[in-house]
Image 1 (cartoon, rainbow, N blue to C red):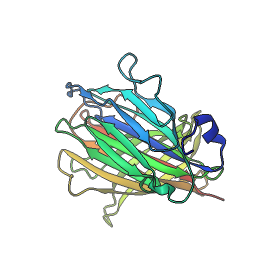
Image 2 (cartoon, rainbow, N blue to C red):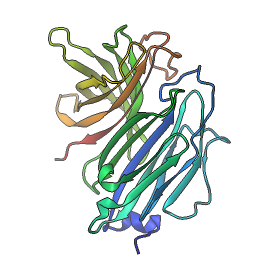
Image 3 (cartoon, one colour):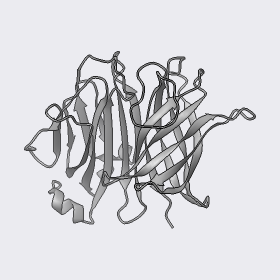
Image 4 (cartoon, rainbow, N blue to C red):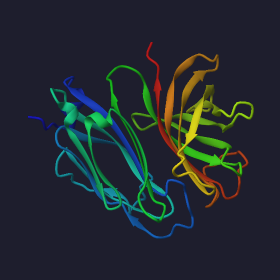
Length: 288
């Protein structure tokens, strides 16, 4: 039987586990976006089961999972977005056997639908615009290895402070695979004048505010979507302890605009009053 209960799959060594985090709507907060978009939909697997880890910005009374679930292979939700975004993070468990990478995972909603194979979800990073209102969807998925290296998600704001999209700041948080916040990161991104390299630098602190180390890497812009008002791109790099010992990797996608409203996350950096931005990615600790 390829179907399973969540309780049994979590402890069964013959099941593989995948993390899947999706965020949809106005990825960059935009106070001018007042038209509602219905993202209600369903996530299904053709075998195995789905476990909800956390909700992302679900508003009470408006956004919710459909209960009771018809089975462990189906997760339905109701979600309406206007100025901001919603999303969720789940674990998906599958029986490991010959051909299991061909199992399918289907995400279906009004603005965006796609079916993935498990092979695609081994290491997936998606950022797509879905309509003329500026709504987008971001998906980060990974195959997890039990009892190995610590890993999780990154999310926050990637803000342009330069006029020509050549630099700015970023700030956000580390999230563990259990959905709990593990700390914060903060830094700058830009172009090195001498070499033209696109680099980012920053620091990270743990969940109680203690300085833990540094992070650095490179970033790039999608030339097909880049323009003077809004651009999209990627980043990848490493994070270090306070003694500059390499601890792990981080990577993901970003979106940045100069139009919109002031970020309200409480960041202390001085930013352009019309700055907006968003990034979403994953971090992974190096194995000893």
